[in-house]
Length: 283
Image: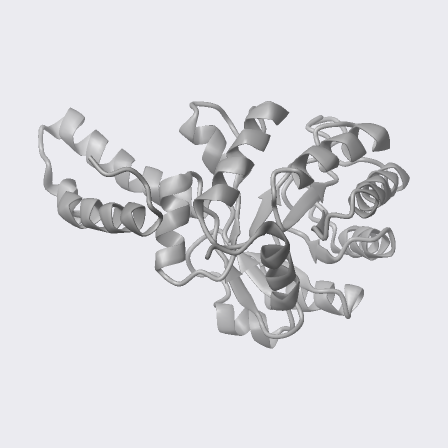
């Protein structure tokens, strides 16, 4: 029997209690199912990955499209799903609260709210506004009885404001506002990660590893963080393979890069067995 939403949410909270786990980011149903088969214990959506799959830049998908994507991911696997819910699809606390209630209804086990504005001139909400938005998200989850883990995200390092003291102050404030887990994507060094972990202890911290050569899972665990996600990096890896092969065949008339492709027979065998195990109709 597949686990229900409540069981997934309980399992997700338990993962944050100790140790450090990997939270990979699928961008569609197929990648979600494959990650489960490969041993993932939980998944997180990626706003960038799903946007690119629809021919749009990160952040351009409307709320309803994001909610439908979340419903698909939740239904696709037996794993808890953490929603990359961008900035809550609203500037005001009231708008964020409404969006959060809709997200909780999709069955996600966790969701993150960013403090980014999408305004290049003022890329971060003022701290008091950002805190009010987090408090509204917390109140909305509590009011609807959804045991959804709330992640407070500070986007300074992502939006060209790599101010560690400001980031630490924001994360502390988000923890006080009710965030269960804290996240500052864009941290580069062990010292930065350690500073965030210390600033919000004992709340769990998420660390983004988005490129080769970064900290390993073991190193992040040793610094005291509880989870590691990769954002759009898996989707970018897939796009990288596509780009190399497409450029080679179109510019040079060669097909060497296709040697790195996953064999179609293996993919068909996996998805056939996966569908059969789920009782899906077979051709």
